[in-house]
Image 1 (cartoon, rainbow, N blue to C red):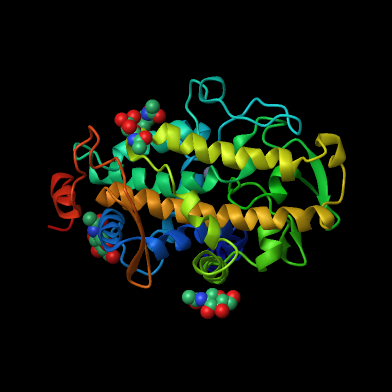
Image 2: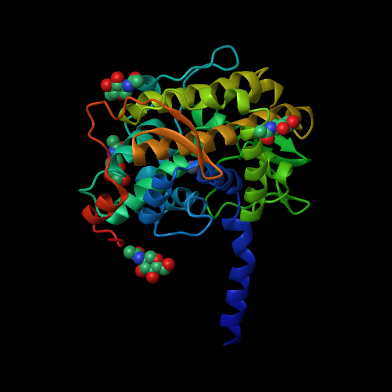
Length: 345
Ligand SMILES: *[C@@H]1O[C@H](CO)[C@@H](O)[C@H](O)[C@H]1NC(C)=O
Ligand SMILES: *[C@@H]1O[C@H](CO)[C@@H](O)[C@H](O)[C@H]1NC(C)=O
Ligand SMILES: *[C@@H]1O[C@H](CO)[C@@H](O)[C@H](O)[C@H]1NC(C)=O
Ligand SMILES: *[C@@H]1O[C@H](CO)[C@@H](O)[C@H](O)[C@H]1NC(C)=O
Ligand SMILES: [Zn+2]
């Protein structure tokens, strides 16, 4: 009896540091997206996820990072990145044929799950997984080191952050998550990564704080002049081309911000200083962009239109070829749920 109580106390203590780690970026991306979904897309997503809570996208945003470490989900591990074989800092570029690999990559995965989430011949659990994958991978593809092959995406570049030995990939951990077995490295009770240094924690409430701030900068602030270009060229009938655009955009930051003076300039260096100061603005913009683009993508999947909604009003609508293209109009949420044997009729 007492050993059972002891064991479950240990489990409770262990949970926050292992499972909440690294979720800040993904949760924030999902919360930003929720803010801009049009009504039909809200219904579409809530029906599939069977969740009408105020974190319906955010609650599943890191599922893919747990799934990849299970026996069933092992196949999806290569879907979290694309290994650009470029040569930063002199040349940054991503090439689908050169870099995606036979096992697939984040670009082919976004395309596959964009098709699958609208495929009424699939079971409701397969459709549910497809949506969870999209929410996660649109986040991952915006992390510059998920679009870079060099030293395993920076994992093999040793650096220090606040005096703690870590690696370059880890401190850019805006959007990634470690296997539950990997120990956390805490400084003053905080994770050694740049987003959490900025926000001060990785709980859902921290993601809510960050998303509120980034949404206000999108609506009326530093990002306002750029937001339209962020969602130009969304084409759900050609997800490879669209997501290759996102990959190239993120990869360009490897040359300009992640390794501007090459690998040797950061190897063994303390990066909680000038490096942090230059990187953090890029991290914030990538998170904001990922959330805004995820909303545009899900709106288009659900309705055929790129519209974004704020405060209950559609604030932007872009003509989209999707309606006119060879792919038929997407399923309405109700028809979709019926066909998929969903729970809401
Ligand atoms: C698409 O997703 C399904 C389900 O996860 C997977 O079995 C299949 O291999 C994927 N196909 C490609 C081309 O990635
Ligand atoms: C946008 O922000 C500026 C100040 O930064 C303010 O003067 C203006 O009223 C705001 N506009 C809207 C529509 O909120
Ligand atoms: C979207 O992709 C489809 C399929 O490749 C293509 O036929 C269509 O022209 C594309 N639309 C735009 C606006 O590029
Ligand atoms: C949906 O969620 C509710 C609880 O929130 C649960 O009772 C129900 O079984 C779920 N439906 C499906 C189809 O999973
Ligand atoms: Zn991931």
